[in-house]
Amino acid sequence: MKAIFYHLSSGASGLFLLALAVFMPALVQAQPASDGQSVKALTTNASGALVVLRGSGLFALEGQTAVEMPLPPSDSGSQPNTLAKGADSSLYLAGPGLGIWRYDNANESWQPLNDTLPDLGITAIAAHATQPDTLYAYLGDDGMFRSRDGGEGWVKVDSGPREPVQAFLHSDMPGSMESGWLFAGTTRGVSRSMDCFCFWGDAGELRGTVAAIDYDPSAPENVYAVTEGRLHHSSDGGETWANLESTQAVTALTFSPTEGLVVGTENGDLLTRDASGEWVPLYE
Amino acid sequence: MNKWSFPLVLLVAPAIVMAGGAPTNSDSVPAEVAEGRQIYEQYCAACHGRQGEGTADWNKPDEKGEMPPPPHDETGHTWRHSDSMLVRMIAEGWRHPFNKTDRLTMPAFKDILTDQEIRSVIEYLKTLWTEDQRRYQQDESQDSNQAESPS
Image (cartoon, rainbow over all chains, first blue to last red; front, side, top):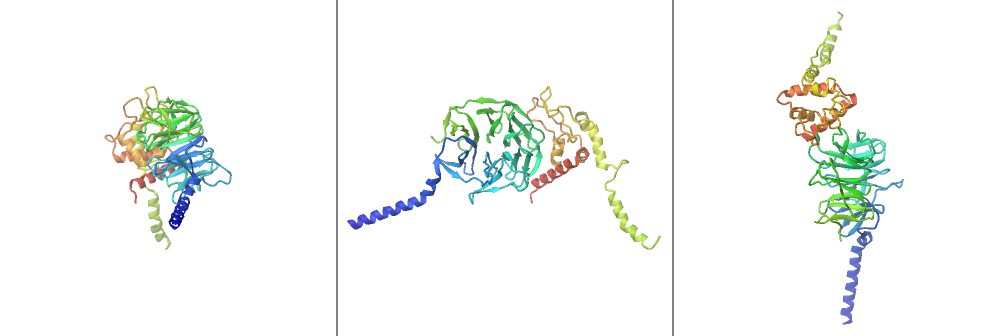
């Protein structure tokens, strides 16, 4: 009997140790979906999971847990402030002093794409909605740059709108002379140009500093922008805007393939709308 | 004539002929550009200006809610488009999606101008741009050609 108990006991211990070895790394990295820190930027990754940039770090949300992702190294201590998802689902990150980086899923590390940029002062990036190799970067001191080879070569294409750009978006909304539209959230409101950079004009009369901008890929005329904590919606490609009431000050937004419109808030929460249009916490 | 003169003529004459390039008019303007200018003045200048200067305030909707004809010179954005896009715009026309009217912003000329005439107009427009703009537009055209016929 003692021998049987011993075997069972040692077997259970072994299983426990095995389980610990397997799950310990995940337990160390996994955190609650919200840590109370304001959401700086949002996007989704190749599997559709939300990627959340907070002051405390970068996290991929898997269900109700947040798995911390590494950040690019920075000698100057520069912090990222913006995320973008490419047409091939590549994940991009940028910030003033950091430049722009692409996430390498295989090596779980960031690759710099800054060799041909004049400086690292990027305040906003956008990825082309349908062309995986086309990227856009706004440099506060130098204007707008475009790469058509995945970030290897950057060419200055325009000075951009009159006011500095805080948020950037490429959309495949129909009607462009070329392959889509660019929306630039500035300190004055939303500017819009066809992606030929033909000219920047006001997208409607929304005024204020734009912190975030995104659109609904399944209905591209629907554009969303955040100004000073308030969420606005345009159903006509930026011609007119309506305020969308939210329960908290909004700081970031994205479109999730599974959840639809998701906003990040000043309190660190992630909210989405239920069938009746009410804001509800994600993953609760 | 010394003994070197005849071979020298054989060597240099073809180069002189080739340096002349396309047939030119009396002002040494390539014939295609001269033809393009003539067509431009007949069909385009009434809206886009005789010198390609466009309409004042061309980048804001007019009182009818339509985008006015833009300049084609260095102050406009024509130089930002590839050759193939410019051909398509002139041939098929284009409507700005945010115009308040349904009519084409840029009328279609495919029933009025031949393909060659459209290309001539584009060659003339290129003479209104800066060297940097011509280089940019050439790159756009090359990128566009590569995109349309990937190797």
